[in-house]
Amino acid sequence: MSSLELLSIAIIMLYVLGTVCIAVGLLARRDRLKRLSQWLTLAGFALHTVMLGLSMQGQTWQILEKAYYFRMLSWSLLLIYFFVWWRLRLEFLGLTASPVALVFYVSSFMLADVQSKLPPAMSGLFFGLHIGTLFLSFSLMTMACGAGMLFLYMDRKLKHKTRLSGFDRDLPALSAFDKVNHLAVMAGFPLFTLGMVSGFVWARIAWGKVLSWDPKEIISLVVWCMFAVLFHQRLALGWRGRKTAVMAIWIFAVCVFSLLGVNFLMTTHHSFNPQ
Image 1 (cartoon, rainbow, N blue to C red):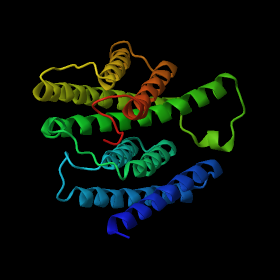
Image 2: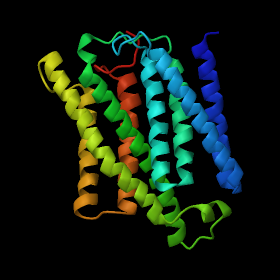
Image 3: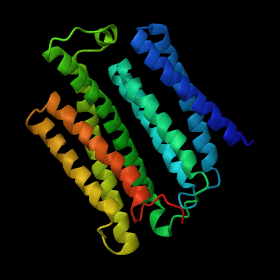
C-alpha cells in the first residue's frame, strides 16, 4: 500500500469521526464532542493538504487524475468552513461542511482510474484561476445552503410556536444564519464571476470563441444569473431571511446538478467520463 493510499485512509477516518462527533455533539448537546469534532476535522484537513501537495509533485494541471479535482473541491469546502467558522464562530456549520467534504472525497475514488489527459486548451494560468475561484464559490454556497436549511427549519418552528427540543435551543438566532448567507453571497458572487470570466477568456484563447454553447457553459450562465439576482437583492434591496435562504438552496442545488449531472451524464468539454 502506497503512502498516498495510507494518507487517504487516515483522511477518511478523521472526516468520518469528525462528522459523527459534530452530529452527536449537537444532538446530545455535548460541548466536548463538538470541540473534538473540530480537532479531528482539522487533523484530516492537514493530512488532506499534505496529500494534495504530494499528488501534485512532478505533475501538471494537464495530466492530473480527474479524482484530484474532486479531492481539491473537498479540501476547498473545509478551507471555507474554517474561514467562516473563524469569522462567525458558528458550530452548526460543521453539520454541512464535514459530511459534504467527506462525500466528495470518497466520491473521488470512483474516478481513481480515470486519467485526466486534459487537452492543452484546459491547462495554464486561466484554467487554474477558473477552477480555484469556482471551487471557492461553490464552497461558500455550500455553507449558505446549510445555513439556509436550518433557517427554514427554525423559522417554521418559531412561526408555528412549536416546542423547541434540546438541539433547537442550542442553535443561534435566525440572524446568525442570515450572516452566513450574507458572507457567502458577498464573497461568492465576485469569485464565481471571476471564475466565469477567466473560463471565457481561456476559451477564447484556446478555441477561438467565448461561447460554444456547451451544456456546462449554459448551466453555469444560469447559476451566474441566479447568483446575480441574489447578490443584487441583498445589496440593493436589503433582502434577508427566508427569501435569501431559499435562493441559496436553489443555487446550491443547481451547482450540484452542474457538477454531477452535467459532468457525468452529458457530452461536455468538462466531462468526468473516461476518455
